[in-house]
Each structure stands twice: as C-alpha cells, then as structure tokens.
Length: 60
Image 1: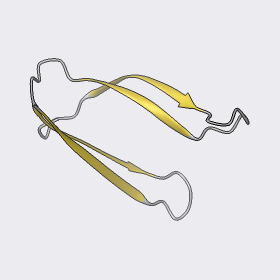
Image 2 (image 1 turned 90 degrees about the vertical axis):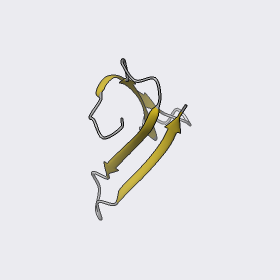
Image 3 (image 1 turned 60 degrees about the vertical axis):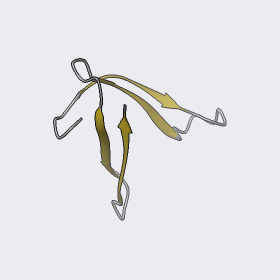
Image 4 (image 1 turned 135 degrees about the horizontal axis):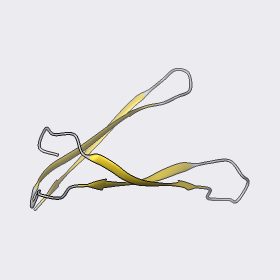
C-alpha cells in the first residue's frame, strides 16, 4: 500500500465446483492507518511455468 508491505490477516480457499480442488483464494489485508492510496498485489504461480501476475487499485 503506497509502497509499504501490508500484513495478510486472513485467507480462505475457493472451491467453485465443490470438487475438492482449490480454484483460488480470498485474502484479507490489514490496511490500518491508510485512508487512501494505491494498493498493488503481485503473485507468482507455484506451477510451471511460474507465471507472475500483478494487479492494482487506487482507493480514494
């Protein structure tokens, strides 16, 4: 958040079709002390070819 790392405070697995295979994750971040700014996230796949994805949102 604005160039600072936030603590992840909770995560939840997502199984869209109830087949016991995790399809994705919800993450909650502690942004206490920030009223506005740019939140960005980057993740690298744990599977070959280890693609990296990023996303960001500006919060007013």
